[in-house]
Image (cartoon, rainbow, N blue to C red; front, side, top):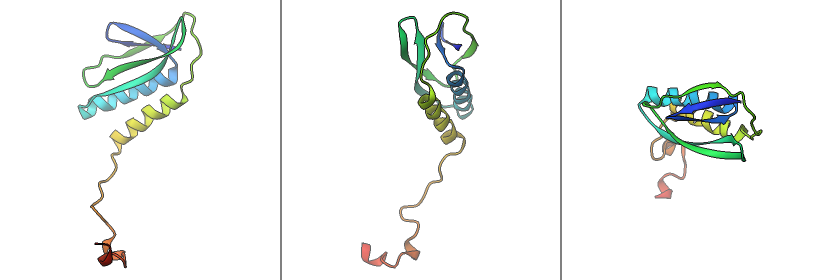
Length: 111
């Protein structure tokens, strides 16, 4: 488990989540963009979630967590963060209104 330091505090989360947050924050900074994310965290009361706004001005860093921590499920959150990151790095190509009109035998009749 790692402590993900954000603003004047930190949250305890898995290494995979912390790495995905750091990667996404770096990409957001490069794109001069920001995003609101929600990540699973471990608290003394048990698993919880934390929302944070990350972007170019975010000052994030991680340190090992030495105290007790409750195990948390992180796979869905990791996949979400990596997917968001990939969409920024490789944005989808924009497609025209109907790109295959000349190949469509029904094109003239569909309007």
